[in-house]
Every structure is written in structure tokens, then in C-alpha cells.
Image (cartoon, rainbow, N blue to C red; front, side):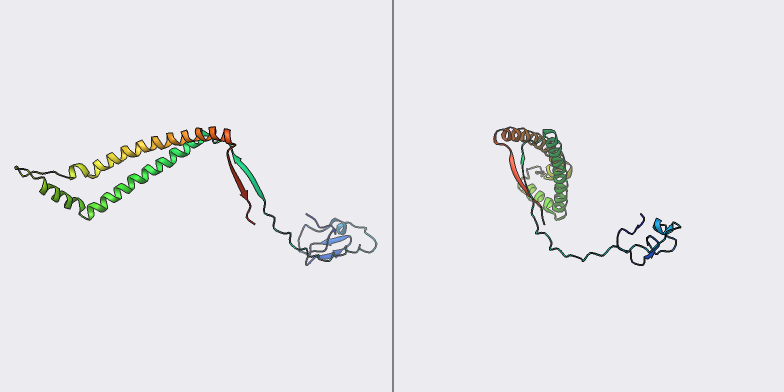
Length: 183
């Protein structure tokens, strides 16, 4: 972009024949009037600099928008509720596994096993063995089945909720929300 004298000179710039040059050695931004031969007469006066007028900043205007949520896409709700319920199922499996290991490390299962076996011991010397029912494999199998049922139910209920919301929004006009811009 060449500077053709339409504004004040740049710092370090020099006035030449018909305009202003950038003042940098080897710069291609020199003005074309100064480069043309045959310019006669005094160089034109630079435009007068305007006094810097300091305007007060405009008062902050807080924009607001009132919107109504009148329709929710059931397919989007289905996908979102499936992902949320899948994450909840994974968290449930991890939490139960950690809890089982903590209880096992504290010796809770051994203590309960010996207490229950002492109470339920029959004449042959065998009693109820707790670890046959609360071993890690059996606990994770039961929790996995519960988590799978939860994923299916939560996904179905989320989708049903979207359909019910759409019916209600058609009657009432939807959920009104006011959005405001932070200033």
C-alpha cells in the first residue's frame, strides 16, 4: 500500500516532490508523484492535522434477547441421553470396582465371612460362604446388568421426555429464556 500524501507523514517519513515516502531504505512504498520526473513547483502542503477530539466512551448498553424454546429434536435428545447414560454406567462400574477393592483390602469380606460361617455352621462343619456371592466377578456381572438396563431406560425416558416437552410447548408456547450480554 503506498502512501500518497493523503494523510500525515509516517514517523521517519520524508516529504518528497509530490507526496510522502516511507523513509525506509529499500522500501517499495514510495509515493508515485515523487518518483515521476518533471514535477515542477513547490510540494503541496501536508494536510492540516486535526485536533485530537477525545470523546467520552459511550455508555455500556446491555443487549437483551428474549427467546422461546418451542421444539426439541427427539433424535438429538436420544443421542445425548444415550451418551450421558453410557458415561454414568461406566462410572458406576468403576466406582463399584474401587469400592470392592477397598472393602477387600480392609478385610471386611473376611470378617463378615468368618462371622456368618460361625453362625451358620452345621454338623458337618460347613457354613455359609459369603465370597461365593460377593466375589468381584459376580458383583461386576450384576452391576453390569443393572448398568445396561439403566442405559436403555434412561435413553428411552429422555426420548419420551422430548416428545412430551414438544407436546407441552405446542400448547403453552415453550420455555421462555432471556439472554443478556455481559458488558
